[in-house]
Amino acid sequence: MRYLHIDSPRPRIAVFDFTDCEGCELQLANKEETLVPFLNAVEIVNFREIATGAGEDYEIAFVEGAISRSDEVERLKAIRGKARLLVALGSCACFGGVNRMKNAYDLGAANAEIYGRTPKETLPVRSVKEVVPVDLEIPGCPVSKDEVERIVRHLVLDVPFAFHAYPVCVECKQRFTTCLMEKGQLCLGPIVRAGCEAPCPAGGLGCWGCRGPAEAPNLEEFFALARERGFTDQEINERMAFFGGFEGVVVGGTR
Ligand code: SF4
Ligand code: SF4
Ligand code: SF4
Image (cartoon, rainbow, N blue to C red):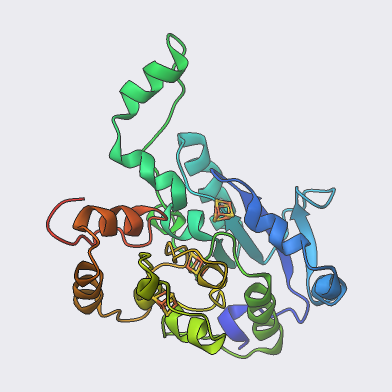
């Protein structure tokens, strides 16, 4: 049996988008130096953003985006019915992403304010796994093309893939970035899953948590550390809520 039940040595893949910006799809088409080997490793049968044709005989469906309309629910279920392996691609698909912030507001009032007498249908935002079973989640806003390529290599070679369990701080230290928490910035690096190679702290911006929680994050210690440096519970909660990966995690009682 091959890894995650994919038999073909050159898996047939499809990529679909829902409520999102399509930036994760763009990542798949990016990075010219590895694009040819990547395209040789898979057979693309349906990928609107970069290919013509809309084949239905895919084994792996990469699903990008959150789910926020009833027609999306139906389309996603149909895709799930056809795919042997369904991969949630990016933070919108894994957690709801930045779209999830709208769940904190009265959607009826927002609809009336924006669309007046012609309101649009809009459901509370859900991640893909809240609607259909998901086999694999690749977080990131956007996803790391390197990581997607590694996962596809593992699928093709029949070797199980494991995400890093440790947090972003490890990769941040590996590139000798001075800690931004020591410079007065809030950074979620201690509790967020590594794999991005910590580009945000390296660029002078604290981590906003696009990859979701690390494995068994020490939340209490992080909250104590952040409070000690003067950050309020509201600031910490707003930061954790940004990409939706910390749904249900709240410091100090309210968000
Ligand atoms: S995860 Fe980020 S880059 Fe990917 S589709 Fe969502 S908003 Fe765009
Ligand atoms: S800047 Fe952020 S990611 Fe880097 S070491 Fe400090 S807390 Fe960790
Ligand atoms: S540092 Fe944080 S916000 Fe930046 S890419 Fe990595 S996980 Fe995402």
